[in-house]
Length: 308
Image (tube, rainbow, N blue to C red; front, side, top):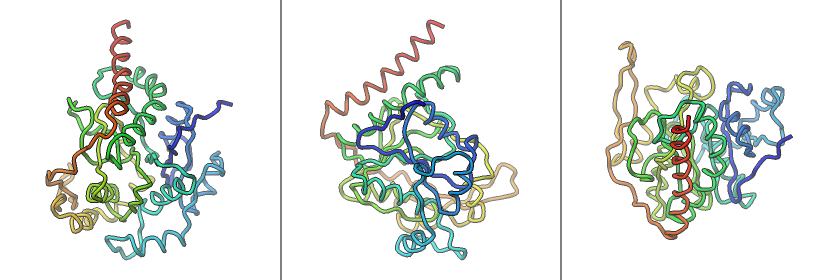
């Protein structure tokens, strides 16, 4: 059996709900192939299904109903009739676990990420998969070192839905689905809707930290799904943006968007473009070295393609 690699001062968490089978959780497949150690985080009622489908119970961090209820009393920004909590308690549980184990950074991943890739390539999928496995452990280390050498408290990758290849290697921006968080900041998750946007803005308004994106690297998620949180969110499509817009009206507005079929519309959040706290670099050498490591993989991409 392959010995799994742990990254110093980082613990990797996969947030999961309603996807007990491995084929439903492409993120886990990526981490397994890269040889990285990680933990699954889920509600107590999900555990048996996951264990019955081969997940090691020692690698499951459980969020109890009691914890969810007590936690959301003080961290709910939008009330719903059925007590829906979203992923908020699970995300907070990750940070609690990291702090309890003396870990500074929690790398939180959604369970439906299908690909991680360098964003300046035109490489075939087989190259992306090859370099994804090779690059991922180094990428985690680089994200840690970037946070260590700057005021970045929440650092994510760029979503695949963002088409523009940027000249900037790193910039302020909203991190979703694949991000590293400094748990020593002790900034608590709030929700249940748009918890990721709210958390980014909570870091941005903390007075000490900022939120950022590593634009050199992107990820894509499954395009369609009727499982996990996506199914749960459907009931609240008309309400989701209201909470964060009320908290941060200078950054987020409420808009209405029609689906492609023209038959449905939902309220969603619109970013105003207001600037975030600037990224401040405290250790230039460490910061530059981290970016250089990732750029090196981009160079290797190009060389491999030329030799093909």
